[in-house]
Image 1 (spheres, rainbow, N blue to C red):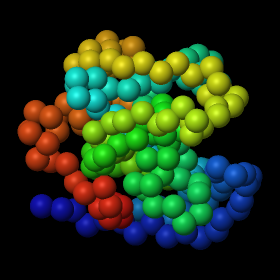
Image 2 (cartoon, rainbow, N blue to C red; image 1 turned 180 degrees about the vertical axis):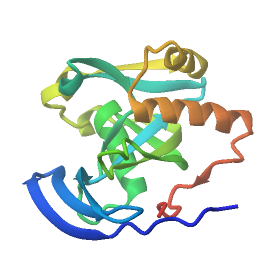
Image 3 (cartoon, rainbow, N blue to C red; image 1 turned 30 degrees about the horizontal axis):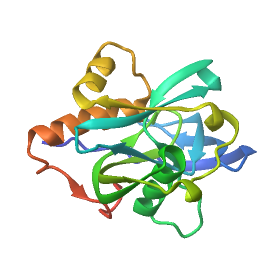
Length: 201
């Protein structure tokens, strides 16, 4: 049984900052019971992430420095959906090649994740990549900035999940992707969706 939901109407909007990846906005929004409230939020271009699972049931993780938290984090190969006209499965395959030098013969949809809906509309679509192969050495992407320092490792899927539950993996997309992969595996992959499934909302 669903309750009647209040319709939150936008009364005013002010753009505080506009950049290549995100825009910071201040909105005046109607509230239940009358009146309005101000809500600051970040409009984000969106992202994709990939759980790359090899034939030995190992997942490919990267360890990358993240300045806002001031430390290296274990993450999935991932990146922004900021290429004009590129669909999300293509973006996932591009990031897989650029970050870990792999291609995938099979791509399925694992899960969609609103990373932090209290302040951003960022949606991360997480894919499962299988039937992996190496990108030829002469066609590999040249990594720059933090990516030049990135470590690439393969871990047993169950060991990676242990790291999640032990607090050793905290990146949200990585946590969600690994847990979703274990659940999908335990159902014989029956819960996977098509890579081109419609976005939520």
